[in-house]
Length: 274
Image (cartoon, rainbow, N blue to C red; front, side, top):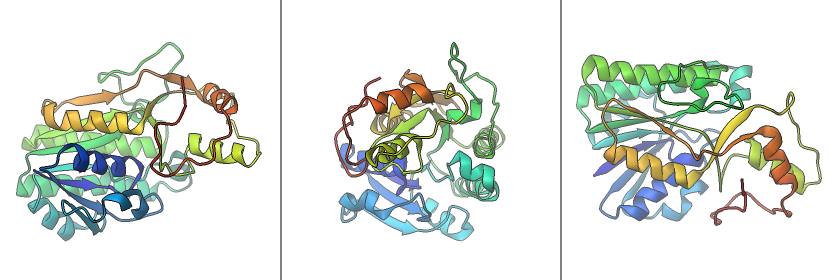
């Protein structure tokens, strides 16, 4: 089987590319990535010379390129996305372009050419905020609170529509907050670790009670791989570690950790115990 993985140089996508190459020695990966600020070739440097790995620099909004790549693949896994909430508040336009129009371009190529499975990587941000006594389910209503979340919810609805209207074999996963090696330093956990290592204060917005579930990135990727192979076409799957913590609780955990020198590189699971 040959997989087209979009956004495979990003934080989560790169871990998924590595998992496929390591766990499925008969499979090939084509990694399509535009190498924006969140896409780093170093994230996949250890597999760059694997004969089953092929990198293509390009954008999922590129109509002709996407169609040529889809023709060569059996399944598509779409990790490509603008994904930072604060950036989306400052300028929503790139989020609409990549997350909505880019997803539509992928879906249309898959519809025209034919594909065994299309898997959309989404986020639990589409459900809005999690209260202290709540959990999200696949039936939870969509209530996005940021342009980023709204763009991902829009993409999910497009995926559903392509399944319902055209019979495209689609799947959606919605995951909670990831953490792990090679995460972009603008994200909460690596940002706080870097600040603390420099002896700086860490910023808590509001009262710090906003709750999210946290999952280690390779655990998420294993779930994506399982859904890709065993998921029921047309279904949505939430991916969770059932580790719901507020930003304030995360901050207290990090403050009580021993000095942590780096949050980059291929290191073992960090000692972030919940």
